[in-house]
Length: 233
Ligand SMILES: [Ca+2]
Ligand SMILES: [Ca+2]
Image 1 (cartoon, rainbow, N blue to C red):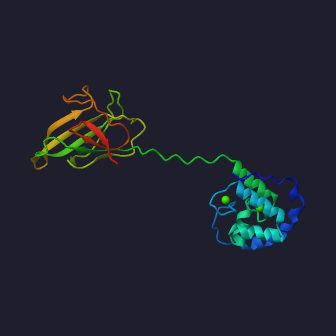
Image 2: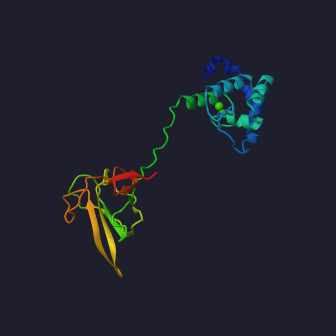
Image 3: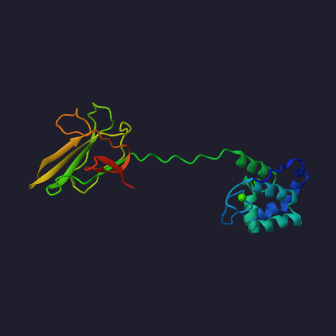
């Protein structure tokens, strides 16, 4: 990081010299905005190096030395002047140094938190009775604690289809228990449960249970052979 140069007293008598450039600047303000205001070395970021350039420019504004600073920036003249007007008031003066200083000393804005993806998707892997099982269905329960009667049904899925539950409300907290039923086709619209299990023994009507839990929101395979959830990458 370049050493910060304090503008201090050197600026006092030099601000008037900016007048002619303020006029030029005003004429070019409509130019298409291309880069970051304040980025005078054109490296894509605002740093103390830009601050030092701005101070040097303002000190030398209206002199050949000022023109050299513009030329060294690699920017077009109008783009340099646009970026040097940090506070956007149409003039380049000490107020822009203050504005740039505020930008530099402000804590960086934390990146916005992406909203959590409150969805669960389960696909079966190695389901049993693969010669006769054609459909499956699943219920997703909201939390590991027993006793909840709130749950989400999947539709009746083909055996290779994924059960998806999107926009789950806040009461759905991982890890999630589940119930699965596997069906075979009786013909017509009739299906018979061939196999079922659940994460709990307590819920009625499900003798089989394996104490396995969907670990989190996200997409998983449930591997019937290992009885584990495998995250879908
Ligand atoms: Ca820069
Ligand atoms: Ca300004």
